[in-house]
Length: 539
Ligand SMILES: [Zn+2]
Image (cartoon, rainbow, N blue to C red; front, side):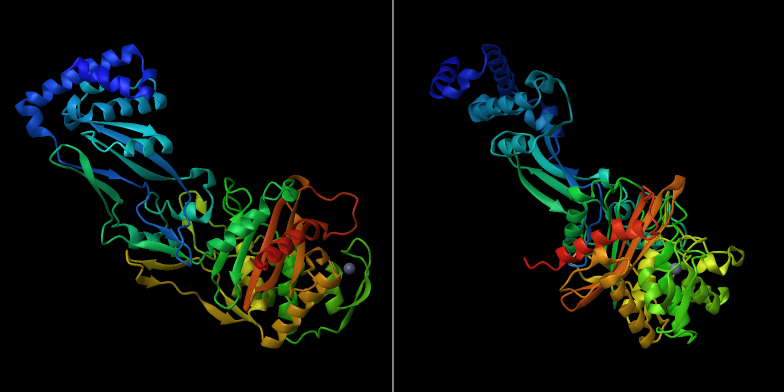
Protein backbone atom coordinates (compact mmCIF):
# COMPACT_ATOMS: atom_id res chain seq x y z
CA UNK A 1 0.00 0.00 0.00
CA UNK A 2 2.73 2.42 0.86
CA UNK A 3 4.44 1.59 -2.41
CA UNK A 4 1.46 2.77 -4.46
CA UNK A 5 1.31 5.88 -2.41
CA UNK A 6 4.99 6.71 -2.97
CA UNK A 7 4.70 6.19 -6.69
CA UNK A 8 1.84 8.67 -6.87
CA UNK A 9 3.84 11.04 -4.79
CA UNK A 10 6.73 11.00 -7.28
CA UNK A 11 4.46 11.51 -10.23
CA UNK A 12 2.82 14.58 -8.81
CA UNK A 13 5.45 17.18 -8.17
CA UNK A 14 2.98 19.62 -6.62
CA UNK A 15 2.37 17.30 -3.71
CA UNK A 16 5.95 17.80 -2.59
CA UNK A 17 4.66 20.81 -0.75
CA UNK A 18 2.62 18.65 1.53
CA UNK A 19 4.41 17.96 4.74
CA UNK A 20 5.45 14.60 6.01
CA UNK A 21 3.14 15.08 8.94
CA UNK A 22 0.21 15.46 6.63
CA UNK A 23 1.22 12.40 4.62
CA UNK A 24 1.34 10.37 7.79
CA UNK A 25 -2.03 11.72 8.83
CA UNK A 26 -3.60 10.94 5.50
CA UNK A 27 -2.07 7.47 5.53
CA UNK A 28 -3.55 6.74 8.91
CA UNK A 29 -6.81 8.14 7.72
CA UNK A 30 -6.87 6.05 4.56
CA UNK A 31 -6.23 2.96 6.61
CA UNK A 32 -9.11 3.87 8.84
CA UNK A 33 -11.35 4.76 5.90
CA UNK A 34 -10.52 1.50 4.15
CA UNK A 35 -11.36 -0.46 7.27
CA UNK A 36 -14.69 1.28 7.41
CA UNK A 37 -15.27 0.44 3.78
CA UNK A 38 -14.23 -3.17 3.96
CA UNK A 39 -16.04 -3.91 7.17
CA UNK A 40 -18.85 -1.39 7.33
CA UNK A 41 -20.81 -1.73 10.50
CA UNK A 42 -24.50 -2.30 10.21
CA UNK A 43 -25.07 1.08 11.76
CA UNK A 44 -23.04 3.03 9.21
CA UNK A 45 -24.65 1.24 6.34
CA UNK A 46 -28.23 1.72 7.36
CA UNK A 47 -28.50 5.07 9.02
CA UNK A 48 -27.23 7.65 6.59
CA UNK A 49 -29.82 9.57 4.64
CA UNK A 50 -29.62 9.62 0.89
CA UNK A 51 -31.15 13.08 0.58
CA UNK A 52 -30.25 16.47 2.08
CA UNK A 53 -31.92 19.88 1.87
CA UNK A 54 -30.39 23.32 2.36
CA UNK A 55 -32.00 26.77 2.30
CA UNK A 56 -30.42 28.76 -0.48
CA UNK A 57 -31.83 32.16 0.45
CA UNK A 58 -32.78 33.91 3.66
CA UNK A 59 -35.75 35.52 1.94
CA UNK A 60 -38.51 33.34 0.53
CA UNK A 61 -39.84 35.64 -2.17
CA UNK A 62 -38.29 37.72 -4.89
CA UNK A 63 -38.57 41.50 -5.12
CA UNK A 64 -38.59 42.47 -8.77
CA UNK A 65 -38.53 45.80 -10.53
CA UNK A 66 -41.11 46.79 -13.14
CA UNK A 67 -39.09 44.97 -15.84
CA UNK A 68 -38.68 41.80 -13.80
CA UNK A 69 -35.12 42.48 -12.63
CA UNK A 70 -34.13 41.34 -9.15
CA UNK A 71 -34.02 44.39 -6.87
CA UNK A 72 -32.43 42.75 -3.86
CA UNK A 73 -28.77 43.11 -3.10
CA UNK A 74 -27.40 39.81 -1.88
CA UNK A 75 -24.18 38.73 -0.33
CA UNK A 76 -23.44 35.30 -1.68
CA UNK A 77 -22.34 32.84 0.96
CA UNK A 78 -20.47 29.71 -0.20
CA UNK A 79 -20.79 26.60 1.94
CA UNK A 80 -19.13 23.16 2.04
CA UNK A 81 -21.00 20.41 3.86
CA UNK A 82 -19.34 17.21 5.00
CA UNK A 83 -21.91 14.56 5.82
CA UNK A 84 -19.84 12.43 8.16
CA UNK A 85 -21.46 9.04 7.61
CA UNK A 86 -21.11 8.74 3.84
CA UNK A 87 -17.82 10.65 4.12
CA UNK A 88 -16.45 7.86 6.30
CA UNK A 89 -16.96 5.47 3.38
CA UNK A 90 -14.17 7.12 1.39
CA UNK A 91 -11.30 4.72 0.70
CA UNK A 92 -7.82 5.31 -0.59
CA UNK A 93 -8.13 3.29 -3.79
CA UNK A 94 -10.90 5.37 -5.21
CA UNK A 95 -10.52 8.82 -3.74
CA UNK A 96 -7.08 9.33 -2.25
CA UNK A 97 -6.04 12.02 -4.70
CA UNK A 98 -9.27 13.93 -4.31
CA UNK A 99 -9.11 13.62 -0.53
CA UNK A 100 -5.59 14.98 -0.49
CA UNK A 101 -6.62 17.83 -2.76
CA UNK A 102 -9.62 18.61 -0.55
CA UNK A 103 -7.38 18.65 2.49
CA UNK A 104 -4.93 20.93 0.73
CA UNK A 105 -7.65 23.33 -0.43
CA UNK A 106 -9.39 23.45 2.93
CA UNK A 107 -6.13 23.94 4.89
CA UNK A 108 -5.59 27.16 2.97
CA UNK A 109 -9.11 28.27 3.93
CA UNK A 110 -8.93 27.07 7.52
CA UNK A 111 -5.63 25.82 8.99
CA UNK A 112 -7.59 23.93 11.65
CA UNK A 113 -9.18 21.67 9.06
CA UNK A 114 -8.30 17.99 9.62
CA UNK A 115 -9.83 14.64 8.83
CA UNK A 116 -9.16 13.12 12.21
CA UNK A 117 -11.49 15.60 13.86
CA UNK A 118 -14.11 15.17 11.16
CA UNK A 119 -14.07 11.40 11.65
CA UNK A 120 -14.80 11.90 15.34
CA UNK A 121 -17.90 13.94 14.64
CA UNK A 122 -21.33 12.85 13.55
CA UNK A 123 -23.99 14.45 11.38
CA UNK A 124 -23.27 17.27 8.96
CA UNK A 125 -20.39 19.73 9.34
CA UNK A 126 -20.71 23.14 7.66
CA UNK A 127 -17.80 25.26 6.44
CA UNK A 128 -18.10 28.80 5.07
CA UNK A 129 -15.70 28.96 2.15
CA UNK A 130 -14.55 31.46 -0.45
CA UNK A 131 -15.85 31.46 -4.02
CA UNK A 132 -12.44 30.26 -5.18
CA UNK A 133 -12.46 27.35 -2.75
CA UNK A 134 -16.03 26.58 -3.78
CA UNK A 135 -15.00 26.27 -7.42
CA UNK A 136 -11.97 24.11 -6.60
CA UNK A 137 -13.97 21.73 -4.43
CA UNK A 138 -16.62 21.38 -7.12
CA UNK A 139 -13.99 19.97 -9.47
CA UNK A 140 -13.47 17.04 -7.06
CA UNK A 141 -16.12 14.65 -8.30
CA UNK A 142 -15.35 11.43 -6.45
CA UNK A 143 -15.40 12.27 -2.78
CA UNK A 144 -18.19 10.56 -0.92
CA UNK A 145 -20.43 12.48 1.42
CA UNK A 146 -19.63 16.11 0.51
CA UNK A 147 -21.58 18.79 -1.30
CA UNK A 148 -21.45 22.54 -1.73
CA UNK A 149 -24.07 25.22 -2.20
CA UNK A 150 -24.48 28.99 -2.47
CA UNK A 151 -26.92 30.86 -0.29
CA UNK A 152 -28.14 34.43 -0.77
CA UNK A 153 -28.04 36.67 2.25
CA UNK A 154 -29.59 40.13 2.14
CA UNK A 155 -27.08 42.94 2.24
CA UNK A 156 -28.21 44.64 5.44
CA UNK A 157 -25.99 47.69 5.06
CA UNK A 158 -28.71 49.38 3.00
CA UNK A 159 -31.36 48.70 5.59
CA UNK A 160 -33.56 51.66 4.68
CA UNK A 161 -33.71 51.17 0.95
CA UNK A 162 -37.19 50.40 -0.32
CA UNK A 163 -36.32 46.85 -1.37
CA UNK A 164 -34.72 46.09 1.98
CA UNK A 165 -37.81 47.34 3.78
CA UNK A 166 -40.01 45.13 1.61
CA UNK A 167 -37.74 42.15 2.30
CA UNK A 168 -38.86 42.12 5.95
CA UNK A 169 -42.58 41.76 5.34
CA UNK A 170 -42.75 38.21 6.69
CA UNK A 171 -40.67 38.98 9.78
CA UNK A 172 -42.45 41.98 11.21
CA UNK A 173 -45.75 42.99 12.71
CA UNK A 174 -47.87 45.19 10.48
CA UNK A 175 -50.60 47.63 11.24
CA UNK A 176 -53.99 46.55 10.01
CA UNK A 177 -54.66 48.12 6.61
CA UNK A 178 -51.00 48.95 5.93
CA UNK A 179 -49.42 48.22 2.56
CA UNK A 180 -47.08 45.69 4.16
CA UNK A 181 -50.06 43.92 5.72
CA UNK A 182 -51.75 43.71 2.33
CA UNK A 183 -48.62 42.26 0.69
CA UNK A 184 -48.06 39.92 3.66
CA UNK A 185 -51.34 38.16 2.96
CA UNK A 186 -50.11 37.15 -0.51
CA UNK A 187 -46.65 36.03 0.61
CA UNK A 188 -47.28 34.42 3.99
CA UNK A 189 -47.66 30.87 2.62
CA UNK A 190 -44.35 31.03 0.73
CA UNK A 191 -41.69 28.43 1.48
CA UNK A 192 -37.95 29.05 1.45
CA UNK A 193 -36.18 28.03 -1.79
CA UNK A 194 -34.12 24.91 -1.21
CA UNK A 195 -31.33 23.01 -2.86
CA UNK A 196 -31.66 19.25 -2.61
CA UNK A 197 -28.77 16.80 -2.80
CA UNK A 198 -28.99 13.08 -3.51
CA UNK A 199 -26.49 10.32 -2.72
CA UNK A 200 -25.77 7.95 -5.57
CA UNK A 201 -24.85 4.28 -5.11
CA UNK A 202 -21.17 5.24 -4.57
CA UNK A 203 -22.25 7.46 -1.62
CA UNK A 204 -21.33 10.53 -3.67
CA UNK A 205 -23.70 13.52 -3.64
CA UNK A 206 -23.69 13.64 -7.42
CA UNK A 207 -27.15 14.99 -8.12
CA UNK A 208 -28.44 18.39 -7.05
CA UNK A 209 -31.72 20.12 -7.73
CA UNK A 210 -33.26 23.42 -6.70
CA UNK A 211 -36.76 23.32 -5.34
CA UNK A 212 -39.01 26.35 -5.19
CA UNK A 213 -42.56 25.77 -4.04
CA UNK A 214 -45.13 25.95 -6.86
CA UNK A 215 -47.28 28.11 -4.62
CA UNK A 216 -44.64 30.76 -3.93
CA UNK A 217 -45.56 34.31 -4.89
CA UNK A 218 -43.21 37.17 -5.74
CA UNK A 219 -43.46 40.90 -5.30
CA UNK A 220 -43.14 43.27 -8.24
CA UNK A 221 -42.49 46.96 -7.55
CA UNK A 222 -43.02 49.93 -9.87
CA UNK A 223 -39.32 50.80 -9.46
CA UNK A 224 -37.15 50.82 -12.59
CA UNK A 225 -33.79 49.38 -11.56
CA UNK A 226 -31.92 50.73 -14.59
CA UNK A 227 -33.02 54.30 -13.85
CA UNK A 228 -32.35 53.86 -10.13
CA UNK A 229 -28.82 52.61 -10.74
CA UNK A 230 -28.06 55.70 -12.85
CA UNK A 231 -29.46 57.99 -10.14
CA UNK A 232 -27.36 56.27 -7.49
CA UNK A 233 -24.25 56.74 -9.63
CA UNK A 234 -24.96 60.50 -9.76
CA UNK A 235 -25.39 60.70 -5.97
CA UNK A 236 -22.09 58.87 -5.46
CA UNK A 237 -20.15 61.52 -7.36
CA UNK A 238 -17.34 63.27 -5.55
CA UNK A 239 -18.91 66.70 -6.12
CA UNK A 240 -21.84 65.80 -3.85
CA UNK A 241 -19.70 64.30 -1.10
CA UNK A 242 -20.28 67.43 1.00
CA UNK A 243 -23.92 66.40 1.40
CA UNK A 244 -24.59 63.83 4.10
CA UNK A 245 -27.78 62.69 2.51
CA UNK A 246 -29.92 63.38 -0.55
CA UNK A 247 -33.35 61.92 -1.25
CA UNK A 248 -34.50 61.37 -4.82
CA UNK A 249 -37.98 60.29 -5.82
CA UNK A 250 -39.24 60.12 -9.39
CA UNK A 251 -42.78 59.32 -10.51
CA UNK A 252 -44.06 58.57 -14.00
CA UNK A 253 -46.45 61.45 -14.62
CA UNK A 254 -49.48 59.74 -16.17
CA UNK A 255 -49.52 56.54 -14.09
CA UNK A 256 -48.37 57.54 -10.60
CA UNK A 257 -45.81 54.72 -10.67
CA UNK A 258 -42.76 55.53 -8.57
CA UNK A 259 -39.77 54.68 -10.76
CA UNK A 260 -37.06 55.81 -8.35
CA UNK A 261 -36.89 56.12 -4.60
CA UNK A 262 -33.31 56.26 -3.41
CA UNK A 263 -31.19 58.20 -1.00
CA UNK A 264 -27.46 58.85 -0.91
CA UNK A 265 -27.12 57.17 2.47
CA UNK A 266 -29.36 54.10 2.57
CA UNK A 267 -28.19 53.28 6.08
CA UNK A 268 -30.02 56.37 7.38
CA UNK A 269 -33.77 56.32 8.05
CA UNK A 270 -35.70 56.81 4.81
CA UNK A 271 -36.04 60.56 4.18
CA UNK A 272 -38.24 60.34 1.09
CA UNK A 273 -40.91 58.88 3.35
CA UNK A 274 -39.99 60.96 6.41
CA UNK A 275 -39.46 57.83 8.49
CA UNK A 276 -38.60 58.42 12.15
CA UNK A 277 -39.52 62.07 11.50
CA UNK A 278 -42.72 64.06 11.36
CA UNK A 279 -41.88 65.23 7.84
CA UNK A 280 -40.19 68.48 6.83
CA UNK A 281 -41.27 72.03 6.07
CA UNK A 282 -41.75 72.33 2.30
CA UNK A 283 -40.87 76.03 2.20
CA UNK A 284 -41.25 77.64 -1.20
CA UNK A 285 -42.04 74.50 -3.23
CA UNK A 286 -45.46 74.81 -1.56
CA UNK A 287 -46.00 78.01 -3.61
CA UNK A 288 -46.91 75.70 -6.51
CA UNK A 289 -50.04 74.71 -4.55
CA UNK A 290 -50.86 78.28 -3.48
CA UNK A 291 -50.54 79.43 -7.09
CA UNK A 292 -52.55 76.45 -8.38
CA UNK A 293 -55.45 77.11 -6.02
CA UNK A 294 -55.57 80.84 -6.78
CA UNK A 295 -55.45 80.37 -10.57
CA UNK A 296 -57.88 77.49 -10.53
CA UNK A 297 -60.42 79.42 -8.44
CA UNK A 298 -60.12 82.34 -10.86
CA UNK A 299 -58.93 84.66 -8.09
CA UNK A 300 -55.90 85.87 -10.01
CA UNK A 301 -54.52 85.90 -13.50
CA UNK A 302 -50.89 84.95 -14.20
CA UNK A 303 -50.21 88.52 -15.49
CA UNK A 304 -51.74 90.41 -12.54
CA UNK A 305 -49.25 92.55 -10.66
CA UNK A 306 -48.64 92.76 -6.91
CA UNK A 307 -46.32 94.87 -4.79
CA UNK A 308 -43.55 93.40 -2.60
CA UNK A 309 -42.59 95.94 0.04
CA UNK A 310 -40.20 93.56 1.82
CA UNK A 311 -42.39 92.70 4.79
CA UNK A 312 -41.45 88.99 4.59
CA UNK A 313 -38.81 89.10 1.84
CA UNK A 314 -35.47 90.38 3.16
CA UNK A 315 -35.22 92.91 0.31
CA UNK A 316 -38.32 94.42 -1.35
CA UNK A 317 -38.89 93.05 -4.85
CA UNK A 318 -41.13 95.99 -5.84
CA UNK A 319 -43.89 95.47 -8.37
CA UNK A 320 -44.00 92.03 -9.98
CA UNK A 321 -46.40 89.99 -12.07
CA UNK A 322 -47.60 86.70 -10.56
CA UNK A 323 -45.27 84.82 -12.90
CA UNK A 324 -42.29 86.98 -11.88
CA UNK A 325 -43.13 86.54 -8.21
CA UNK A 326 -43.06 82.78 -8.77
CA UNK A 327 -39.68 82.99 -10.61
CA UNK A 328 -38.13 85.02 -7.79
CA UNK A 329 -40.05 83.12 -5.13
CA UNK A 330 -41.34 86.34 -3.57
CA UNK A 331 -42.80 85.66 -0.13
CA UNK A 332 -44.71 88.93 0.23
CA UNK A 333 -46.66 88.45 -2.96
CA UNK A 334 -47.39 84.77 -2.26
CA UNK A 335 -48.70 85.71 1.16
CA UNK A 336 -51.10 88.08 -0.61
CA UNK A 337 -52.11 85.41 -3.14
CA UNK A 338 -52.68 82.86 -0.35
CA UNK A 339 -54.82 85.35 1.54
CA UNK A 340 -57.15 85.53 -1.45
CA UNK A 341 -57.48 81.72 -1.43
CA UNK A 342 -58.05 81.47 2.32
CA UNK A 343 -57.12 78.75 4.79
CA UNK A 344 -60.00 76.33 4.14
CA UNK A 345 -59.65 76.29 0.36
CA UNK A 346 -55.86 76.04 0.49
CA UNK A 347 -56.14 73.03 2.80
CA UNK A 348 -58.73 71.49 0.47
CA UNK A 349 -56.35 71.74 -2.49
CA UNK A 350 -53.44 70.44 -0.37
CA UNK A 351 -55.30 67.43 0.97
CA UNK A 352 -56.74 66.58 -2.44
CA UNK A 353 -53.13 66.03 -3.53
CA UNK A 354 -52.08 63.79 -0.67
CA UNK A 355 -50.51 66.24 1.78
CA UNK A 356 -50.69 65.52 5.54
CA UNK A 357 -51.49 61.84 5.04
CA UNK A 358 -49.51 58.70 4.20
CA UNK A 359 -49.07 58.20 0.47
CA UNK A 360 -47.77 54.62 0.33
CA UNK A 361 -49.38 53.61 3.62
CA UNK A 362 -46.22 51.99 4.98
CA UNK A 363 -46.57 51.20 8.64
CA UNK A 364 -44.71 48.38 10.33
CA UNK A 365 -42.12 47.88 13.01
CA UNK A 366 -40.22 51.15 13.37
CA UNK A 367 -40.65 51.89 9.67
CA UNK A 368 -43.58 54.23 9.69
CA UNK A 369 -44.05 56.59 6.81
CA UNK A 370 -44.62 60.11 8.18
CA UNK A 371 -48.09 61.59 7.77
CA UNK A 372 -46.81 65.13 7.86
CA UNK A 373 -48.41 67.89 9.91
CA UNK A 374 -51.32 69.99 8.69
CA UNK A 375 -50.90 73.66 9.61
CA UNK A 376 -53.39 75.12 12.05
CA UNK A 377 -55.43 78.13 11.00
CA UNK A 378 -53.79 80.06 13.83
CA UNK A 379 -50.38 79.74 12.14
CA UNK A 380 -51.51 82.51 9.82
CA UNK A 381 -52.23 82.42 6.11
CA UNK A 382 -49.05 84.45 5.37
CA UNK A 383 -46.89 81.65 6.76
CA UNK A 384 -48.96 78.83 5.32
CA UNK A 385 -49.02 80.32 1.79
CA UNK A 386 -45.21 80.12 1.62
CA UNK A 387 -44.95 76.57 3.00
CA UNK A 388 -44.21 77.29 6.63
CA UNK A 389 -45.77 75.96 9.87
CA UNK A 390 -46.46 72.57 8.26
CA UNK A 391 -44.64 69.32 7.60
CA UNK A 392 -44.75 67.17 4.50
CA UNK A 393 -42.70 64.30 3.07
CA UNK A 394 -40.83 64.38 -0.25
CA UNK A 395 -43.14 61.67 -1.60
CA UNK A 396 -46.20 63.79 -0.71
CA UNK A 397 -44.71 66.74 -2.62
CA UNK A 398 -43.84 64.38 -5.48
CA UNK A 399 -47.53 63.56 -5.88
CA UNK A 400 -48.65 67.19 -5.56
CA UNK A 401 -46.13 68.60 -8.05
CA UNK A 402 -46.94 65.75 -10.42
CA UNK A 403 -50.55 67.01 -10.60
CA UNK A 404 -49.20 69.97 -12.61
CA UNK A 405 -47.06 67.76 -14.84
CA UNK A 406 -50.00 65.40 -15.39
CA UNK A 407 -52.23 68.24 -16.74
CA UNK A 408 -54.12 68.82 -13.50
CA UNK A 409 -54.96 65.22 -12.55
CA UNK A 410 -53.59 63.94 -9.23
CA UNK A 411 -52.26 60.37 -9.41
CA UNK A 412 -51.47 59.08 -5.96
CA UNK A 413 -47.89 57.79 -6.23
CA UNK A 414 -47.64 54.05 -5.63
CA UNK A 415 -44.87 51.49 -5.44
CA UNK A 416 -46.29 47.95 -5.38
CA UNK A 417 -47.15 47.06 -8.97
CA UNK A 418 -48.31 43.47 -8.63
CA UNK A 419 -48.04 40.08 -6.99
CA UNK A 420 -46.76 37.37 -9.34
CA UNK A 421 -46.86 33.58 -9.21
CA UNK A 422 -43.73 31.54 -9.86
CA UNK A 423 -44.25 31.75 -13.63
CA UNK A 424 -44.63 35.55 -13.52
CA UNK A 425 -48.38 35.46 -14.04
CA UNK A 426 -50.12 38.36 -12.33
CA UNK A 427 -52.01 37.22 -9.24
CA UNK A 428 -52.99 40.72 -8.14
CA UNK A 429 -52.56 44.00 -9.96
CA UNK A 430 -52.30 47.11 -7.80
CA UNK A 431 -53.98 50.32 -8.91
CA UNK A 432 -53.95 53.85 -7.61
CA UNK A 433 -56.45 56.65 -6.99
CA UNK A 434 -56.68 59.56 -9.39
CA UNK A 435 -58.73 62.73 -9.45
CA UNK A 436 -58.77 66.04 -11.30
CA UNK A 437 -57.58 68.88 -9.08
CA UNK A 438 -56.87 71.72 -11.55
CA UNK A 439 -58.16 72.54 -15.00
CA UNK A 440 -55.79 71.71 -17.81
CA UNK A 441 -55.28 75.46 -18.40
CA UNK A 442 -54.21 76.06 -14.81
CA UNK A 443 -51.76 73.15 -15.00
CA UNK A 444 -50.27 74.48 -18.26
CA UNK A 445 -49.82 77.99 -16.83
CA UNK A 446 -48.00 76.68 -13.77
CA UNK A 447 -45.88 74.30 -15.80
CA UNK A 448 -44.79 77.25 -17.93
CA UNK A 449 -44.01 79.27 -14.80
CA UNK A 450 -41.87 76.36 -13.54
CA UNK A 451 -40.02 76.54 -16.86
CA UNK A 452 -39.33 80.27 -16.29
CA UNK A 453 -37.92 79.50 -12.79
CA UNK A 454 -35.24 77.37 -14.44
CA UNK A 455 -34.58 79.76 -17.34
CA UNK A 456 -34.21 82.96 -15.30
CA UNK A 457 -35.31 82.45 -11.72
CA UNK A 458 -34.13 80.78 -8.53
CA UNK A 459 -33.76 77.41 -10.26
CA UNK A 460 -31.24 78.52 -12.88
CA UNK A 461 -28.72 75.92 -11.69
CA UNK A 462 -31.07 73.26 -13.07
CA UNK A 463 -31.09 74.84 -16.55
CA UNK A 464 -30.15 72.62 -19.48
CA UNK A 465 -30.17 74.31 -22.86
CA UNK A 466 -31.66 71.62 -25.04
CA UNK A 467 -34.04 69.91 -22.61
CA UNK A 468 -37.53 70.99 -21.53
CA UNK A 469 -37.34 70.98 -17.75
CA UNK A 470 -38.88 73.18 -15.11
CA UNK A 471 -39.29 73.27 -11.37
CA UNK A 472 -39.45 75.16 -8.11
CA UNK A 473 -36.81 75.66 -5.46
CA UNK A 474 -37.40 75.65 -1.74
CA UNK A 475 -35.50 75.90 1.48
CA UNK A 476 -36.79 75.58 4.97
CA UNK A 477 -35.67 75.55 8.54
CA UNK A 478 -34.39 72.27 9.95
CA UNK A 479 -32.93 71.42 13.32
CA UNK A 480 -30.39 73.65 15.07
CA UNK A 481 -30.16 76.40 12.50
CA UNK A 482 -29.73 74.01 9.60
CA UNK A 483 -31.61 74.25 6.34
CA UNK A 484 -33.44 71.73 4.18
CA UNK A 485 -33.05 72.25 0.45
CA UNK A 486 -35.71 71.26 -2.10
CA UNK A 487 -36.07 71.17 -5.84
CA UNK A 488 -39.23 69.74 -7.39
CA UNK A 489 -39.67 69.68 -11.12
CA UNK A 490 -40.55 67.94 -14.35
CA UNK A 491 -38.54 66.37 -17.18
CA UNK A 492 -38.92 63.77 -19.91
CA UNK A 493 -37.08 60.70 -21.15
CA UNK A 494 -38.15 60.14 -24.73
CA UNK A 495 -41.94 60.42 -24.82
CA UNK A 496 -42.41 59.78 -21.10
CA UNK A 497 -42.97 62.64 -18.65
CA UNK A 498 -41.73 62.46 -15.10
CA UNK A 499 -41.76 64.47 -11.89
CA UNK A 500 -38.76 64.42 -9.58
CA UNK A 501 -38.25 65.73 -6.05
CA UNK A 502 -34.69 66.30 -4.84
CA UNK A 503 -34.44 66.78 -1.09
CA UNK A 504 -31.20 67.75 0.67
CA UNK A 505 -31.79 67.65 4.44
CA UNK A 506 -29.74 69.40 7.09
CA UNK A 507 -27.40 71.41 4.93
CA UNK A 508 -25.39 74.20 6.51
CA UNK A 509 -27.38 77.42 6.49
CA UNK A 510 -26.00 79.80 3.90
CA UNK A 511 -24.78 82.69 5.96
CA UNK A 512 -24.62 86.32 4.94
CA UNK A 513 -26.89 85.83 1.97
CA UNK A 514 -29.99 87.78 1.18
CA UNK A 515 -31.40 85.11 -1.03
CA UNK A 516 -33.59 82.75 0.97
CA UNK A 517 -33.61 80.33 -1.98
CA UNK A 518 -29.92 79.49 -1.78
CA UNK A 519 -30.62 76.26 0.09
CA UNK A 520 -32.54 74.39 -2.60
CA UNK A 521 -31.30 76.42 -5.56
CA UNK A 522 -27.65 75.70 -4.72
CA UNK A 523 -27.83 72.12 -3.52
CA UNK A 524 -30.88 70.35 -4.95
CA UNK A 525 -31.21 72.11 -8.34
CA UNK A 526 -27.74 71.09 -9.66
CA UNK A 527 -28.45 67.47 -8.69
CA UNK A 528 -31.79 67.60 -10.52
CA UNK A 529 -29.97 68.82 -13.63
CA UNK A 530 -27.24 66.21 -13.32
CA UNK A 531 -29.79 63.39 -13.03
CA UNK A 532 -31.89 64.59 -15.98
CA UNK A 533 -28.77 64.90 -18.14
CA UNK A 534 -27.59 61.44 -17.13
CA UNK A 535 -30.98 59.84 -17.82
CA UNK A 536 -31.13 61.46 -21.26
CA UNK A 537 -27.65 60.39 -22.30
CA UNK A 538 -27.64 58.02 -25.26
CA UNK A 539 -25.78 54.85 -24.50
ZN1 LIG B 1 -40.58 89.80 -2.39
